[in-house]
Image (cartoon, rainbow, N blue to C red; front, top):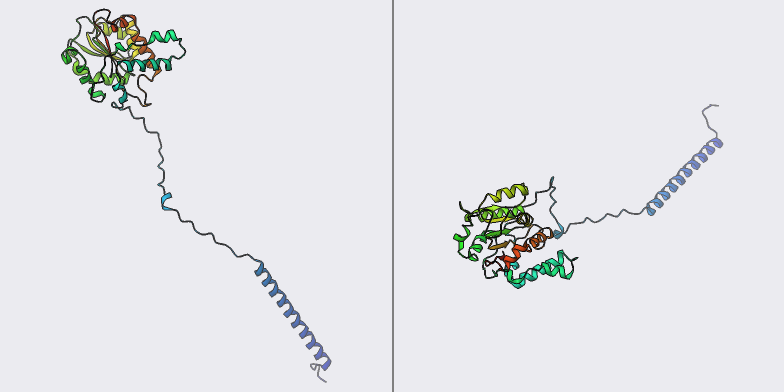
Length: 290
């Protein structure tokens, strides 16, 4: 009998084992398939966010970056408050009274009344039709000065005795005013800058004492110091011109600056000048607000 021959019982047993193995594999495949279906059913689908389209009215240009701050522009010479030009004597007196109360509110009623500038001290120049710009200042002075340009271009034979002083809010503004009034300067009558920048009071006093001044331009404090010290004479003074319409970078006129208004008020209340404003010495001095 051959050794390779398989008996029927053995053949039946192998067939049974083969069938059992196939059933087990089918069960495993079925289990895996169900598991995959379950995981697929529980997995949430991804949601895509809609694209946002910018609205045309919200589009803005990119901001420019500056590496340094631009320099502040110099105030315009024609930056003025036109309402000042429309004020007559009583209204100018009210303006002074209002500013005295604002800047010197701690004074008593009696002290405040002593600082008031009377309406008769002002020359009414509200009829001047042109704007109070810097280039029109010479025309303004000619119109309201007896004798016009010829009288403005002469002065006393004595030095340091101007017929006109112009009060400006700053040294820079005083220099601009002096420049436009230069046509009135002659060999006999100087148009002099009296502001304090780079010039000490003693030096300014010596210069004034040697100069026949027709028109003096400066800040209130420097003029006040020169008048108190006796270096600037008032015997020939006919007019005090206040550069009142001009506004600085902060939109302020000379009446709004306490550090300038208070010295100007002190100048106008000097005893000798007050007497001239009242005409006590025969020749009256007028205040003109440009």
